[in-house]
Length: 440
Image 1 (tube, helix red, strand yellow):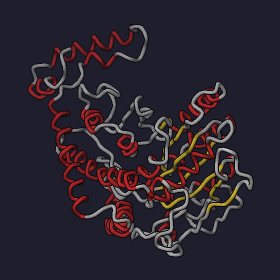
Image 2: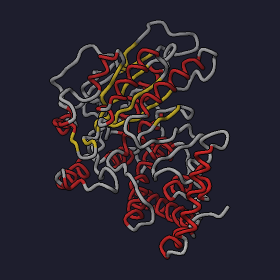
Image 3: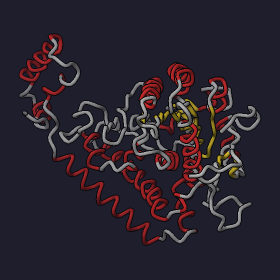
Image 4: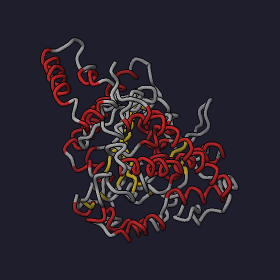
């Protein structure tokens, strides 16, 4: 991940992303030390050029053509394990099924909002697989795959989107897809763009101080963001803070080509986001975000470096493409050609790429595919039915959990709300809506 030089001629981010996806980056472990320790084998690391995307699998799921077919993948011992690799693929396969279910529910008015991760499954799940279970995650809003990887239930995720009484993360007070889970070390998502970056930097500094006490030595912070968030002031503030103060943190940038409707070509003139890392004095690597194996490898190495010494900041830029709309409030056909989207979906689909890899190992077949899809649909349907039957939390909960003691201004708001409810409670639409809330 060391930056030896900046190569501004390699790419203009998504302006040449199609060509970049055709490149092959050859990499091999190189020795750091010629004297192995008594308890460990000789230390190894992988040196990357930060501006040429790391790639292991081509768009049809084949390994680097310069390698013999059965050559073990360097530093990918886990993904050479059948159960681990099929778990990665299984969650990647389930994400678009979940997204389609929830998007359709929004279109039918059964939930208010949703955001998909179509086309970015490899970047999300591939990176999640490389993290430690106790790594603190500060997500943006397309990282539900991380929660699924860590064992979060569909009931939990779908209850949050419905805002039902079973929404343990926010008690029905957050927008859909704004997940949080203490159990899974997943911090609450906030709507304002890029606010998670300085928050994550602060968490990394706190973790650095904790490590000085000899605690949590194997844990780091991972902050997810898009290239659009990198255009916000909080990006500079957060990255600089993390670099100067130190602390183990990986900034994982999903460069998917669009900040809502603004293409990356209109966001910056520089060479993507990874090229900025040198100015902050941190390591960076660019990776093919549609190659789950490459994403796993890059994230694992970034995490290893972040944990070195007292901890430091490292950046990963995953070059991918947002196949879906920005959200259910967006119609991307207004600002990009639908044919372009279809080409990306067919030509460089991370799910197809990972499936081809598994099939080449004889770990996957059409029967397993069909069974897994059916299971996902069955499980999601059950969770949706469960969430819809559950009442919403009491309206009285709107004013709790902010202050330790009751505040006068919040009590005034609560009383005003009660007056409004009493005044309009007999209106048919209002009356019907109130039935959905718990009286407790």
